[in-house]
Image 1 (cartoon, helix red, strand yellow):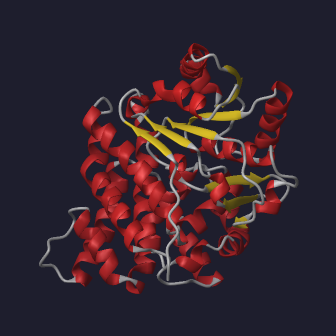
Image 2: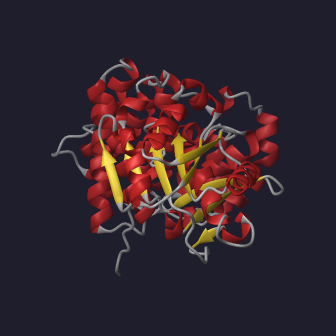
Length: 385
């Protein structure tokens, strides 16, 4: 089996990488950039900084700031209207995964007919989109390095997972200094999200030697730096390590695949508007325990890479320590349970069958070491609640 690897053609990693936004736009021969972001980032002055950087290179810009957490098809269409009204020929996404995913949607709708729903699934986008430069401000989704976007279909209450090389950013500016002000809950949720990307990419049925190397590096960095970044938000070494881990996690899963955690996570977000990173974090221990016997040697390697198990432990013993370690990590980082997110047992139970169906329909569970049926997913949901 051959493995296809796609990463951005230009990737800048390090402090003040954001200052290269103008240089990259000029390399792409662009004249008018749509900056895609959310109200908080705009209020922080960061989009204004990008606009000034572009202006210094003689490049015009317009800002679209209506991105919401877990973006919807309506966000994308509003951004597309702004792009067309201003004649923009390029996009720069500044923010977390929501801003980057929204910009990816705008990019491909600008050059393709149809709706995002038409592109749901794998490899269904006919034409390349407008060039996109991704500037992540959270160390979590890795969307700056992926050919994936996740957008909620508001008519169907479904999170659409769209995977296509045409979604890959033309450039990524990975600047850890932009994460220094992340609050502790966000640091925790996106940090465990990054760990989930590394683990699922490594245990996926579509893993390859190339993605294995990147995934294990991601996992090791999280094990080394996540608690330090949470305990001391101004720790630059930890912040830099987590930013690198996030990008590596994105590279790994986008070229391998995600599995059951992501398949179950998206419906929780669509139904209850729980942020993606948080829903992944809440599900990771239970889904890992369910899946472990399908790839015990790989999960044991994950445990050893995280420093949870010694080399002379049996694989079974190492896997037991992995489950304990994931539970302990969530507890240490104060990751809540689903029941602590304002979701009643009655509400959750009333939609659990739909969520299980949507999870299976996404295709991600089919990559899992153990492929569940709908009843097993329902049981996992209820146990995680």
